[in-house]
Length: 145
Image (cartoon, rainbow, N blue to C red; front, side):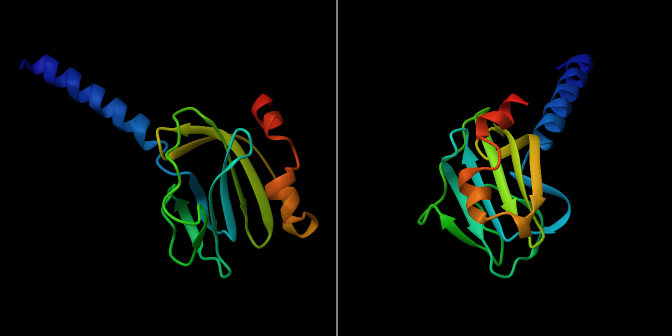
């Protein structure tokens, strides 16, 4: 192999690695966050995965299908969640003791999330049904913005 070809292949591998490194988790918090409940939903608001904690621990990130210590998987009841489909529309929804957040985005590969539009509000003034079921803003609206 020539030096130029090896140099080109190394540069290409670095670019691929940098792109892939950007989206490895479904949640990657700027600072550790005490999450009480987290759900990943598909573009039709169908539940794909849910974890809960009665005494939340501060999380720096969450990987799809891997239950962090101190949490329990609520859905699916048994086994891992189905693999994500690359570029499928997703909504990540979670609560902390103080606020809720809904983050629209898309799957990156079979287990990562690339976020886009989001909305949030104080937990004290919003029912869990509005956050997780009724949606304060219809899912389709999150994707149009």
